[in-house]
Image (tube, rainbow, N blue to C red; front, side):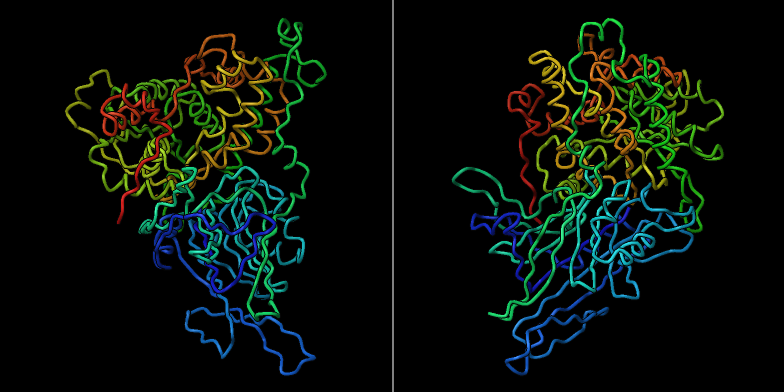
Length: 610
């Protein structure tokens, strides 16, 4: 996990191909470059670097000569411009949490051609790497060799990524993120009040808001930051001869790989079953898979490969420190139990596995109860693995500073539901708790005779994407009841097409603020394609009760892994399983009933001022 940013000043950015400059009120934030570097260093604690480029017009000496653009590099920030009518600056910042390569690196990287790369992501396929390679270095070389074919290179990458890349030969700034938005990248498009163009993995924690950004006419809110929509963008820089100002125009590029187009469109071929499909549980038209158990086995294979890619395919850079390399965000529910069981099959037996569990109600939270039952079941199927359940207890009333920080991290998200989920994820990623010991005598825990523990794992497996793809949410059942299979399919498609905006950016920012990298095995490209190829009635059977028919495909996978108890458990979202939603409702609305009446999940909180 890394943090990346660029601040572009003194350049007129044309947005006509995307949108236009708005005269409506915008939220305004004040922060310094040091603030940006500080918040990025939380994501990438191994190193922080910066690189500046200055742009200035070359004024012609005679009428026959044209105006051109000169580029000057500046490492120290002390470069002085000559007597020009206009100048621009691109300030690149990068921090690194290094998980690959045998030698330490510092971002942003610069090659011999003057290209600059700030990269936050992983290459799990598409570009060839050896186990000792650093993927950022390999990607920079691939981009330099590709010349004008930057979208082609980025479309090849399998894995999560966000990128900022300066291409020296074309004087072009490239940026973007993968098709599902598995890595955060925020954008501030130029406005009348603030004409800068900014990209950053996260909003600076010390940013001070001035102006609400609320449009009085329709009540809409115009945030300083927004989630950059998924895709590849470019800004070629040039000179406007009429005013001798530096200008650039934003263009969004199409994906070059047809795989991405198909996955983004998320069109399932088999949606509405025939009567014989339901009676025989067969897959008409797909000869390779003929039974439900065969389908589950296929899903198990691709899920295991997804976990393997994310844990053991490449050497994990740990510097001089040998620590537990991978942990699991663990509720003891279906998704996290499957990930833990598969991790055991993929990770070197010498390592312990930390299972991180958050509770806002001590031993009584549903997620704590299921986690304790889950580790018992894991020990039955993998008795040789050293499992370690890390109990992370929190009291919402005592998290004043932490809450303020999470408010900044989830920006531009601003609802209590986002805050609750973000807080739970942030605490889990911090990994500061105590070791749960199996014992029939609970007085040990109750008397606080606990072994304190700090999880040092840099990779955190998270179950995001399972509910969206396997009909795990309550609203999926509602859509099915009201509109049957087609309505269910459309709701799931909507969930997948907006997951970048509703979930993944927020989750990435909250987890990585602790110097941890979230990895999402259920959002692997091959997993998504496999699940999409399966008939919908084999994914979920919502005629059956909760805990049985929802996510039925994953329940079958759990049974194949020997996880028979968890295969019967109903879905619980982290904000409810940890009971942070209940505590938040009591704190902010007085009671759960009052919160429900106010639809607390969608209510925006008032961000604190500095």
